[in-house]
Amino acid sequence: MTLSAPPEDATAALFRTRSASAILANLGSVLKKDRVSLGDMVDALGEAGLGLSILMLALPSFIPIPGLPTGFVFGTALAILSLQIMAGADRLLLPQWLRRQSLPRGPVVNGGIWIAPWFKRIEWMLRPRFSFLSGRLAYFILAVPIFVHAVMILLPIPLGNQLPSLAVIVFAFGLIERDGLAVIIGWVLTIVAIAWNSAIVFFGAELSLFLYRWASDLWAQI
Image (cartoon, rainbow, N blue to C red; front, top):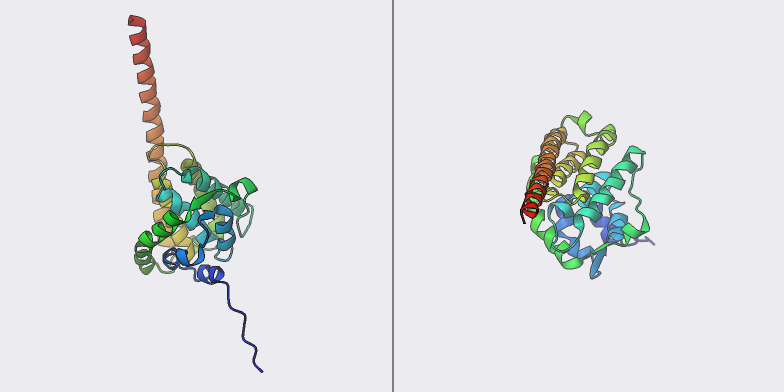
């Protein structure tokens, strides 16, 4: 008598595809609860590898959900992941307070459906090349700029989340598909993101100082 293998868990099977577009398009089939906790997401991503973990943690900050602290929550998780990669970890471990953070299921599923076709087009253009830029050693090297991006994401910098998130997403695609060209583009975006956020902070500080002096002069005249 032939014994059939036990059915594979749907979540594990989906994340084992290692295709970001397929995962995003089918989130509704594996996310059954009304709210999606970060802990549940991280546990599921443990089957997928570090590249997809980096991608999925950067994505919510690139497509912010109004009224939810996605930048702080996912930026913190991404910072912890990058530090653990530097320490040689192969999967993400989060403190309990962060694991309990959750998002409503609807925006998560709808956002995945919306962006999946775009990711599929990107995956079609990627292929293994310049493998020395996307191998195992690359994870340790890229953990440094990913940590810098994570800090920029979690800080409340106006218009400061998108470019760092995009750079991390491009890095992640390069690691997943072993495409060194994508990694190079990620480095270019890193320079742009740092310059952009530095400019925002600098001009924001200058504007604050100008307004403070103006208010002080106005008060002195009253």
